[in-house]
Image (cartoon, rainbow, N blue to C red; front, top):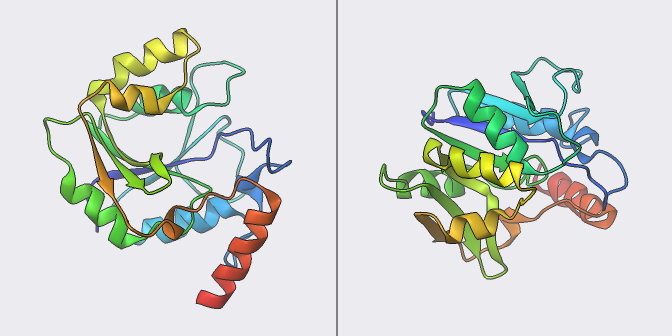
Length: 194
């Protein structure tokens, strides 16, 4: 078990999907959020979900609602809320729409983390994956400033911080389910793996 709190970010707008992707059925569960929560509970000591509302889900879960009332659907509100809610000095974050990031990728990111860093984030040939990695409390001031300034570019934050980028040669684990066709492809991929 990994001794770091895992935060599943499930507060996005899902505009490209056309409906809340965290509530789509997946992997034998009623929702993608529940699928992620149950599978990650098997490898982390603690798993929480960051979402706009605490009562968004129909299953029993530790949900951290956004404490900052904004109409902004960006991870910055979630980061501020999570660090203000928890005492943890670092957290592992994963977007709800990346169901194929597994123990191997997570373990590599955790092993690369150091107290001197602000973040450790996955990177592939397609670029960095800011919603798959470790973030330290040392970034809380910057997250607050980003929220205040309506600037939500995590890539920009990481470039100006003490961040390490861990390269993975296989992009498939980091596939995002943003569009309906990507969701359909993921359903087929998941069925074939089972």
